[in-house]
Image (cartoon, rainbow, N blue to C red; front, side, top):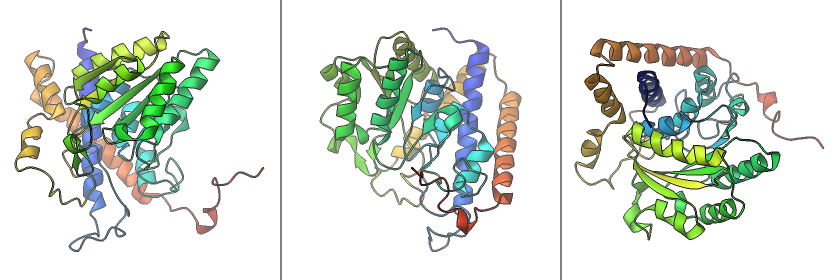
Length: 330
């Protein structure tokens, strides 16, 4: 499908937005935690899993989605939610554990929920896959043209919930797209040591649904594959799998020593930076100058810093609020 200058520039801006947010969160995260790493210290305590390097997957898929299309995400959710259109201030405040956050500071970075965008995530590996199938079943029963999308890693493709979900989605011909973000490692275990098949996209054959593998560092390749899958689902064509081969430029979690990486691997993959790939294409077409690229970076930096200031200045929830919004009185 032919993409206009405006569409490509919008995706470029989204790539830069996600990267800028993640890199700044990475900087803030280490405040107060060093020199001896203290995971409980600083303005953002606890674990942190950043999306740096994988921006093209979220951007290419979510460019086709509407606010009312349900999305389930993972323990590495920031990129998906930003691409879906989240308010950066509310998301940053939640990461800081503040009362003004998406979940009033009670969820944190791995439990971001935005009902206005029909978005949810969680720290359980593969936990969102059956949720997306459930949302797709509701969509079909209501006769709507919405599409559910589930993002998850290649490690999650080896759990039972993945196969059960694909089976049900195929039997019921549900409008759901399964997006496997294959960043080569399930924490520290390479796919070659954990997965019997060459590509998780091939697993669609077992359930009679289409599967395609794409270059997850190329946002245009992701956009085209996602467009076909999402359009087919909206038209009643049923589920499909997209496997995007990508790479995280930071560790599985912040503080990861990354001893499992082969020498030079990360440097090799940094040559396939999704921002540089699309930026170079735009420049070759005369649609983006160095000055315009710098202006976009400055704009996104300002947006992220504004969200950061909002989060820092927001209050923490009061202790007596701990049980609010948690239990339902029947």
